Amino acid sequence: MKNTYLLSLALLFLSFTTAFSQQKVWLDADTGNEMDDLYAIAHLVKSDKIDLIGLSSAHFNNADLNVFEKWNAYDAATLKPVEESQRLNAEILAALDRMDIPHPMGADRQIGRAWGQQDPRDSPAAQAIIAEARKMSGDEKLDILTLGAMTNIATALILAPDIKDKIRLYSLGSWYTPETKAWNKSEFNIRCDLNAFDYLLNLEGLDFTIMTTTTAFALKFDRDDTYAKLDESVEIEGILADRWRVQNPQDKTRVMWDLALVEAYLHPEWSTTSQVMTPPENTQRMVKVYTEIDADQMREEFWRIIKD
Image (cartoon, rainbow, N blue to C red):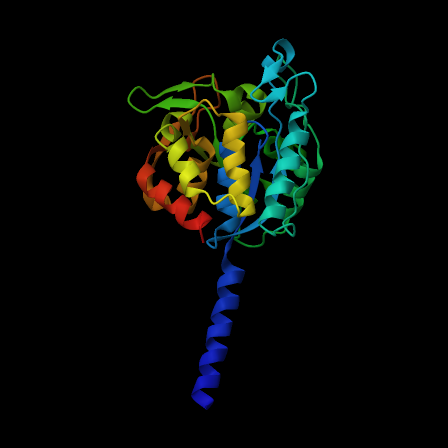
């Protein structure tokens, strides 16, 4: 009996130690933009590998909203991008019974102006990121993943430069060709806030890892296979199926850009990273870039987690 009691105490202590030592992660997502954000968020919320301490909303303001009547399934004239991201974040968390995760709203537009500059765009999200980063002690780091425009994290660093050494940043954005070492910033997330991306590239000492869209392109989902796997009687799975059905019904396959970053972060053994020099117009320093992923492993893992 004594041995059983001691074993139980040891297991309880181990579970508490594991929970305490889990890596703290903050996720920033332009959830309202397309459909892959929802799949990435659901996966990360359900993962038992990390401690998700926050989910903030990012804008997806872009020039098309001013000149076209439609953006995906939205009426462009009435769409408020960050508010739509915020609404969907809350919907996902509610469906997964995780409304305990803080989910503050982010900025509604880029930092600076159309011609550049680095004026911060303050928001509840930026302030929450600052507060959480300042809680890190000793060698502890807060890992921040961004799936859209990098406005919120750039703002947090502009307002509170002291948090730079307390965070590691993982972002989706830009094109990069390893063979030629050529960057291309003409990519949606970057176009939504080029000023923020340039600020982060120029910030010496920032631990910055980038999932380029060049690399993420390998992770694709088949529409009919996805519908067949999702059980729409389960609330979160119904949300995921409906998102594809409403936003991108014409697409037989979709690149799961955001999910590629989440999977590579959770399973570094399924990706290759390289030290890469920043673009020539930026401060010349090394950043990390994902150059290869195991898309098959990532697809299998997504379905295992979402069905768990």
